[in-house]
Structures are given as C-alpha cells and as structure tokens.
Length: 232
Image (cartoon, rainbow, N blue to C red; front, side, top):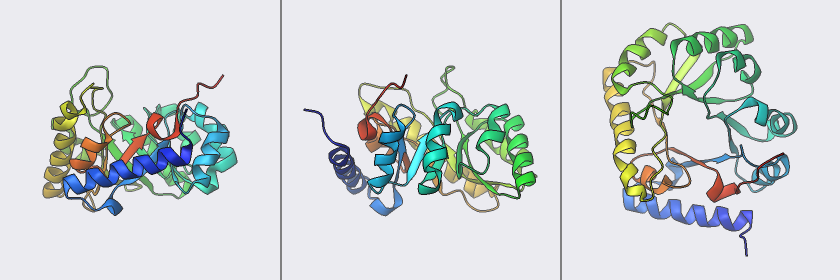
C-alpha cells in the first residue's frame, strides 16, 4: 500500500534527524525543499497545506500554473538550469535561484532585478564531480567568477549548489558533498562576497542523508517526499 504525504514527511523528518545526530548537526540548520516539478497543482497545494513552505521547480513552463495559484503561500526556489531568456519570467517570483553558473546569466539577473527594484538571492552551481553532462562552474574558476560578478550589487550570493552523480550506494557521493562544503569555507576565507556564504544546496532523494552529514543546509527532495506523477 502506498504511503500518504504526511507519512512520507514524517519518515523524511526522522531520517533527517538521524543524519543530523550522526553528523553533529542541529536539525534547525537543515531545510527541506519539496521538489514539485513532477507533480500536479493539487499535490503541490497539499505539500504547502502540510506545513512545508519551500517549493523547488526547475522549469518555468512547469511551474507557471502552480505559481499563479499558490505563489503567495510558499517560498519558491528555482533549482534547474536557467536560460537567460527565461529570467524575465521568474524574476520577483522565485526568492532563491540555485543555479547561477555563467556571467551572461548573472548579467541578466542583475539587469532585470535592477529594473524591478529587487535584490535576488543566488547560489552558484558548481560541478564538483566534473561530469560533462552536468551544468555548473568548475571549482577552480569560482573565485574569479565571484570577483567578476561582484559589480552586480543586486545579486546576493548566499551559498553554493551541486548535484552529485546518482549512485546505488550513496556513500560514494560523500566526496562531492564534502568538496562543496570545503569550497564554500575556502571562499569565505578569501572574503569574496559581501557577507559570508552560509548555504549549501545539496542532496536529493537518493543521497540526502550523506549530504546532511557533510553540511547541507537545503536538501532538494522530490520522489521520496512528494512522489512522482508524470503530468500530461
């Protein structure tokens, strides 16, 4: 028999608590982003009604109807690859952009934010694993990138994001998550952002416990939390 949303939330919460104990973390420092990209408006509404507030979407085309109906009820995170020509659609709607990975996107986010009179919270997407199929900055290039975008004062760089390879044994993802944490700490030591970066967006349904042990502050949970409904 399939589990209910409330049962899945309770089980995920227990798993997060155990990971925090193992990693010496405070559960209050770990936040859940409910990834609703594969589920319906009705399920997204149920997620918000359950008390979860952070919603993750990776394409505006899929998010638009949900945001129009539910935008004021949640905190919206854009977690997918963001095309420059889609910035106009999401600016002012998504409080957090997790996937800043190139100068042209930084420039357009700043330009649109300036017109709107907004500041935008961004995380830099970093390709820690070095996979050619993944987007993200090369870790060695992040310091120079931060210096390049420092002139864009509408962008508030609050942390880093990465995607680990899908592994049958999540333990194999640990070096990726540890690498992101160590990179953030190194960058904070260099003082390249207006304020120290605090956020690490890492860990998904398959490996979020390892990510938490290594310092994740946001875990992006889809299937394990909200299920998977292919929309027509």
